[in-house]
Image (cartoon, rainbow, N blue to C red; front, side, top):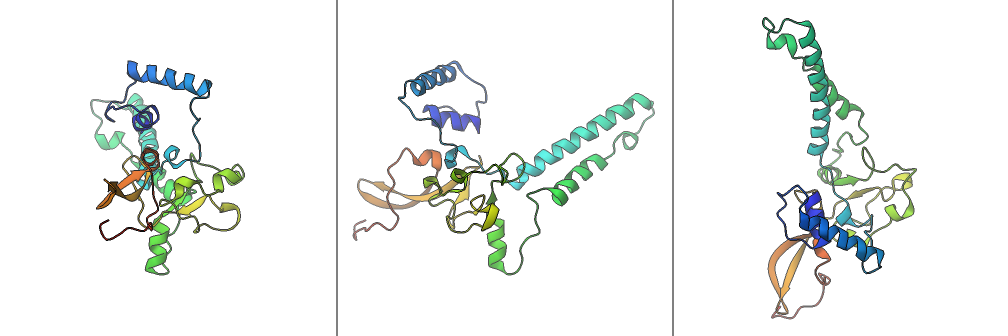
Length: 228
């Protein structure tokens, strides 16, 4: 994710598999910082969807499982100091309880854990497509200002501007738009049709908010003649 963000911000062409800083990266970072100081470039907008990523359930469970494994590792090391290693069996050393407790704790007490709304199929789909700015690593209701809750231009085609609860959660809990999807890096993408040589092509391409800034975007309901 860091490499993708850096490539986008500094206009670099580098494989996302390279996870270390290169000499060119450091040079471009210094250039960009000097441009920002001289007012030749704009600072990042924290509410821009290119600067926000969706942490999936799998990622959150993975983090929780990692905590459980660390606890289990500590317990095994403690047992290894007291037991005779040569005669000890794996079941004498390994106890999966810390891992189980960690996962159960996540599903039972996490701020993001909810019972699924199964009133009807539509409510179930809506619940599954809900995104929240609250929870671990996110905002709190008290700390969230008006700018965070407001509709941002990058929400267009990605997050529904209408479907949000009233009250203290307004603007913090949203729903994905009908055709939007989340890419492998956690950024929300929206579908577009490419215009080539002034003709609208039928092929649909998905762009994230970062990639969208490189193109001129027209309304989907713009009038098109019979030749496209």
